[in-house]
Image (cartoon, rainbow, N blue to C red; front, side):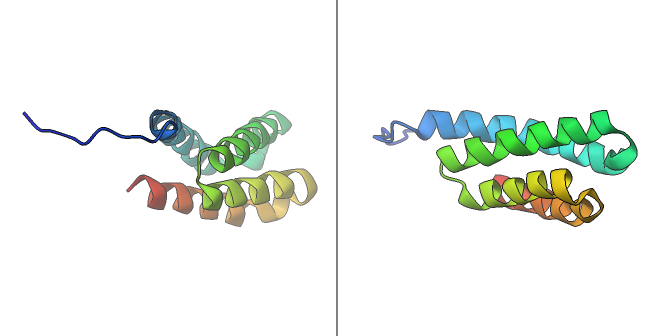
Length: 100
């Protein structure tokens, strides 16, 4: 049996739950990229929601790089959708780096 030190970090469990959800969001972001997310307003709206959620939660749970990338994607989706694909790829890469 492996012995692990007891964590005194009250946010440790919440961070782990965030990372699990982040993995799910990563799959959604990749699927959106593959199907060409700018194909319809509904797709863009869904991505705006995902980016907004990631930006807030990532910042709250100590992942500022994901938060910044998600916020950038959200802004571009709203203001300059044609520039969003690069921001989407950057967010995907940041999430993958964090989950390793």
